Length: 553
Image (cartoon, rainbow, N blue to C red; front, side):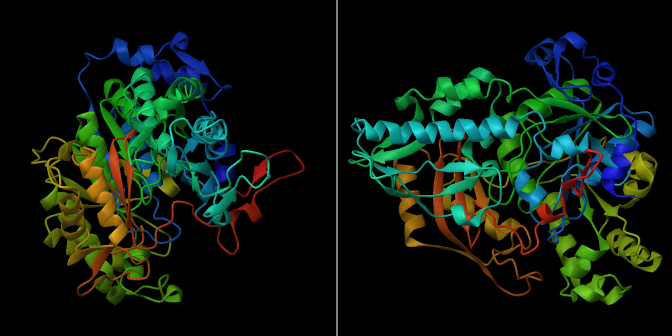
């Protein structure tokens, strides 16, 4: 059966009953039908003094274009912990419509380990991303309206962009204001995908609605004729934007197919944004469960680094253990094996590609000082010989491997890793960040690029250097750094899979995000508006004669 068929053939529990499993009463949720709900802000306030549960971060090696099942493993681990009698809860990101209709498909797990209702979560869910799109574009319209009526703030350069939550390369560069109406000023503009919007980052980094409003007001939207910054609060935009986001800021409660509670909230991409679900959702989950399973986006070089250096720093939390997801096919892929040979048993291919896995382990274990276990997401074509070889190689590195078969067996296929994680979270850690906030912006970028990515040097465009100088002159040099880079490689070249020999990271542009509170460094050819593949998933998605959605995977 397909993922969507498995989901439809599984009887879900009513959301009020899921809430009761984590001691939330019906009066403290706002129901969106039978199986989805928003959680009231009162819940966290009433449990602030509760002891935090253990935080388990799920990350992965550099993925192949179709992903390696990181969300599938996250759900399997949560269900597996429940199977062995532990009180677990998920804290995940919301899917973007971009990949759903693009190449990757849905982001609600697969097989027997899914969050549900999967069609709703993958599509409009509770409308959070639509609200973020509206708030983002409201600010854009207020900027142009201000200019139309005289430009009292003397905008000379506008840095705020419009957004839409779809992959649409045609919107990367556009011309606006072409109606030829009197006083309308035509200008070059561009769109980002919504999950790359600073509003999305702010939702995920805000502590409450008042903090959200303050952060929205602090958004840098442009510069005046004297080169001084202009902020959203100078247009009085933050109040209306907050109104649009008043429901979106509340975490969403759903369930897995095995009825494990799941809080799904916020969804910035990890290759072009900071890649973590909301601080509010994670901190709430830590008060409601003994074990909280959360995930960082894409490979650990991007997602985990940003989770640790940005989210953990801002939230005052740290993981008690890290699950590093790997697949046999991805290891072969990073060994340069031809696509048609990845499905075949090939020990040499694993030997050539295992360095990618080793480097992620080294980063997490030795550079960040965290306890790591490797979760092998098993595919049907994986041979026992390949699995045993990988297990032996990891034992030589002092790292445990757990074979996870959640896709086929649900939580029963994750009991082994669940037991191992309970023990792993009891071990001491020596966690530390990759850089200090007092470091210069270039020093922060250099440390990430050389220590985590393994680059020999960092090269900066003249525009990037000028922007860094301006940011530091404005007093924002102590912000953390979010590097936008391809997810497919440690390098900034998506085709450089093996990353052997020396390579450099090229920073072509720098963007200041004063609302979210970090600096974005654009590396290589990364785009903040993705494009669709030649044959997008949208061509397979439909509604059948019974009114049932088909084709989402």
